[in-house]
Amino acid sequence: MVMGKKIKVIAWLLAVLCIIFFVIYISGLSVFGYRFYVVLSGSMKDSINIYDLVISKEVSRDDIQVGDVISFQSGSEIVTHRVVNIEGGLYTTKGDNNNTEDDAKIKYENIKGKVIGVIPKFGKAILFFKSKKGLVVLFSAVFLIYFIDVWLFKREN
Image (cartoon, rainbow, N blue to C red; front, top):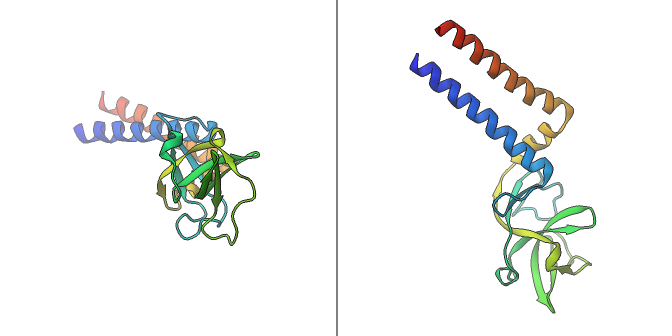
């Protein structure tokens, strides 16, 4: 009986954590200064690949140096590139796999964060759960956990 309760607690914990992470990702919220982005292009290949999940941390202007990888707002998109030059408070960036520097200079105000971690290919799962099929699977899993929990609870009592 104790093992069944442990499994239920772990299943509920995983379900809740998945939903919280999903809501944070979808909303683009910063949580304790961290943001998460899925890479959709090969501009940073081989350091950061397509479908990798990038973890960026908000940092001060002084914490960004040449060679750092940053995530920044460019129009309606978030871009993750390496800083190749800093001059007059503006940042010049370049994708590691690109031949030339980015045209636009980046203002500090547009920087979302400095990349502190990468989870390979995890973005593929995130993008799946953003789709209609993925949402059905996610909420079906939560419902299934609930159903099993109620069913097991009734059996034990």
